[in-house]
Length: 83
Image 1 (cartoon, one colour):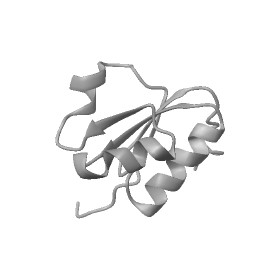
Image 2: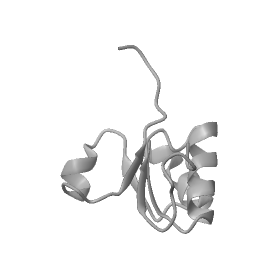
Image 3: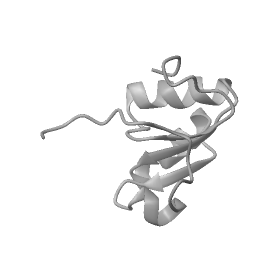
Image 4: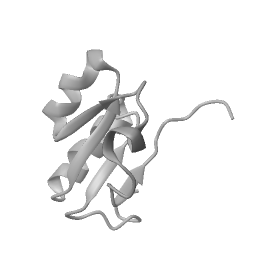
């Protein structure tokens, strides 16, 4: 996924950042030099920071309202569900 998006030193938003795949994506994007913003529950925010996220947004908040429009270069949306 990171290769396909050609992630490097961009600003990356990762949804579901506290799950297994999400934490791996945070770590890998961080190692590629990206500024990582994770979306997570407040209870798991520290684990996301520890994995390399520069910022964590509460999953109950809307990322555009918190960060502003066009504030990230890449979004890794790894949250599955109905719909």
